[in-house]
Amino acid sequence: MGTYISAGAVGTLFSLYWANLGRGNITAHSVGASAAIWGISVLYCLLTDQEKIKIPFVKDQEVAFWPKMLLGAFIVLEIFQSFKKGTSTADHASHYGGMFVGFVTAGYMHANGWKDRPRFVDREGGNAEQGVQERAGVDGKTVDVGAVVKEGVREVKESLTGGGK
Image 1 (spheres, rainbow, N blue to C red):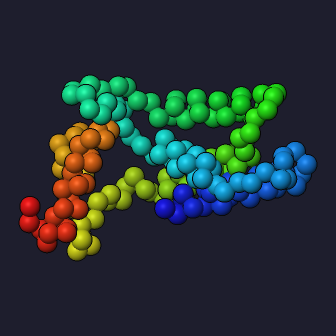
Image 2: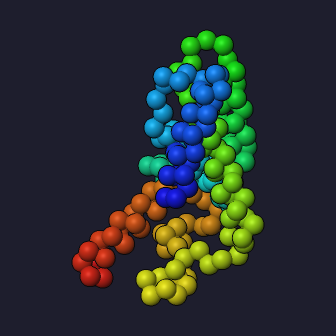
């Protein structure tokens, strides 16, 4: 949540500074939502170890997933769109600010040993054995949105009913 809010705020500041330098549109309004999405996307692509994505609603169908290549394609597309002549209404300076926050956050997390820390903590503060994907029966290298949602709904249901099903 901190990365999302920070990316939105920094993206808005980038947009404001760019406009004050005379290169952007000072009358354009930016609320930072697209910058926040860019920040989270960059952070996810840099931190994930996933190699496959399961296609929702299709049984046993997976697609290869290379997050670093996807991030590279996103950045090249954004650069291409920002230098394209014409009537672009997107706030590209804001997008670059959001990307900057995603890169900085990922770098900070890598420098502080994010991969070595226990990822799942139970309600009592101890290390839990499994995360949502593992409890749903999905291996660690595959993103299965459907299984994660089902397991998450089950957890919420249990917490609301006091642990019973």
